[in-house]
Length: 115
Length: 111
Image 1 (spheres, rainbow over the protein chains, first blue to last red):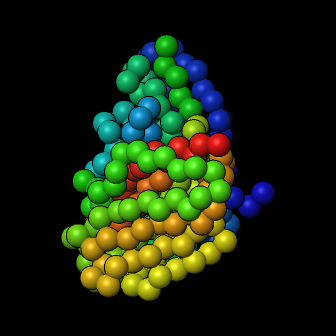
Image 2: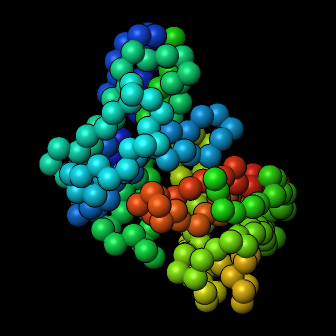
């Protein structure tokens, strides 16, 4: 399967713990996006990378959220000191470098439940 | 905020065409219209996109009005597996062309 891969698919954690999600984009896709989706809502954009550079992070929900893409390939999204309100599906997506007219492909998401 | 407006829900009988409308009256000249769908608990799935001309692929057809202020996604022969939330999106040039999702249209295909 050469699609966007996310791991883990499901995570249950206790409030206050840190969690990390990994995303492997489609090979040779330079752009990588993170989204969050809560029940009944459409996906909400969080941040994106162009290769290893994080070009937009003002939409991250708080300073507890951080993302990296150290070698321009896979990416991680970390949530520190989780809260119950962080329970959601976290989606990763990737696209070729030139965004205009190109398609963004999504992974199947990582479900987070904070108890 | 999303730049598009869609009805919150629609029904369609199996085997009939499903026509999903979308208004994007503030669209700019070089902005594409994208359609995605999301089946419960899965990631969004790309359907089709277009700029000015009508487009067709194996999944659907996209009809864009001449003034580009609205479009319609057509599923020619809806099946039960087409039940999903359908999102009409204009990409946000201010966020690396990230897709800016609204609430979409929840399409229910009935037997």
